[in-house]
Each structure stands twice: as structure tokens, then as C-alpha cells.
Image (cartoon, rainbow, N blue to C red; front, side, top):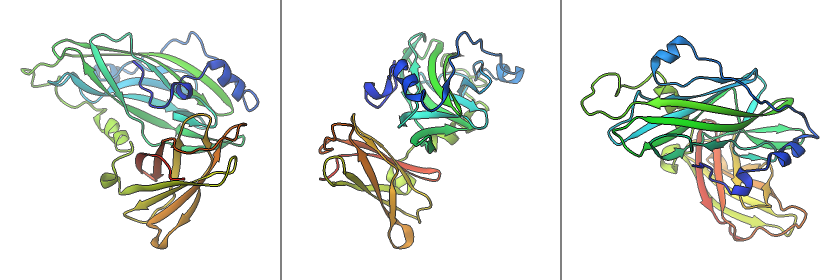
Length: 310
């Protein structure tokens, strides 16, 4: 089961090409054969977290908002990643450098479907490249649906994710969490929220929301300029003054998009974000291709798919 939303070419980059891209900028270290370190006794007793997979730079595990499946056979999990100071990891679209996480749930038992959500990322600039991702800590919310609510769900995740500072490290982790079946007669531990529920909800609130919930709106998209000199213009609106808006654009290959130049309207309730369009050596025109746009302002974010007007 693969939970990527961008094109397979973008999401499933060949590791060799990733290393080649990073080689001019930083030293690559490959980690193999790393054994996970056991979690604390309190974590084990909670029944709602898996074991940490640790390196010197990062740690990752599965956490759950409750101790078992609900009556519909569903449960909200989180992929919790903690990073040491100075390290970052990547969003589903890493930008000009880096690599997106890859998720393989195929070893799970009694798993019907997986729905992954992405908290809005921040922009990083290093070595002349812009990338998108997370620092410090992030929880990626994941909704699991069991094939049968009456049976236990054994969640098994093979996760590949990259972390970078001065060194860039691809990490391969095997994560596990066993979840109790739904039981309408159970009134205690199986249906109560776990201690991780507030943390998972916090990161769910950072996932781009609809315009009426976020107070942000992506109004329009248009293009100007000729081959190799195109500019993408995005008009945004906010129900309160913009603070420091940013825009992440996901489009078809070979197109890329630079850092936006901001022009605010009166009162900063409106903004036009102008981004240079990178079209590769062929300098082809971006025309009627649909773009996935993520507008971020502080803790608020909105997402919309649009085809720009030419």
C-alpha cells in the first residue's frame, strides 16, 4: 500500500540519483543493520505506542490515539519522528533537494486501507536549493481501516526517510504496533483515548484545511512570460492580516518553482505570490497542466488544485 500523492517519478526516486544529487553539497552516510532501541516502560504499558527505531540523529515510532479499533474497524495512528537539533526531514514533495518518505504497509495483518495526511511543511534553504519539510518533531497522521473490526490489527510499516544537516542520511526503519479488535461490550481501556491523542490531534490541525476552516483562500492562478521566463502568479486571501505567507507548488515534471515574491494588498488581507517557473533544459511552456498549491501562513494552511490561466 503506497500513500504518495505526487507522481511516481517524484515520489519514488532512485536512491542512486538521490545520492548523486546530494554529493556536491554534503557527505552521504548510509545506515544499515540498525537495531531499534526499546521504548520506556511507561510507553510499553500504554499499549498505544510501538518501539522506537533510533539513530544518533533521529528516532521514529508508531503511536495511536486509542488502545483499539472503533466499531467501524478504524483507528488514528501517527508516525512520530523526532530529530536532533540541526536536522531536518522531508515533506511529500521535498523541493529542489532531498527525498520524500516512502511507506510500505504490506506486512500488516487485517489491514484494509491507509489514509496518510501531511502537516504543512516549512521551507529550508541550503547550498542554493530550497526544500520543504520538518525540523525538531513531526507526527504524520495515518488513518487505518481494518478488513475486519472483530479481529486484531497488526500494523507493520517499512519506512524509508531521509534526514539532512551537514550530512544526509537515508534511514530504513521497521515499525510495528498491535491493536485490539473492536468490542461493543468493552467499556474501559479498549475505547478510551490514549495519552498520544492530543499530540496526534495537534498535527492533524496543521494539515491544510478547507478555506472556511483555515481562514485562507487560494483565489486564482495565472501565468505570464515566455519559454524559460515564465512567472506563476497566485492570488491568496485571508480573513485576518497575512503574517509571513509561503506557497508550495507541486506540478508535473520537469517543472519546478522558485521562492515567491510577495505583493500585499491594503491591510494585508490579500497577497499575490509570484514564483519563477523552472522548465529544465528544454525550456518548455507550462500551459494547461494542473498544479497542487499549498498556501501556508504560520500554523494555518489551505490546499487547492488549479490549472493556471495563461
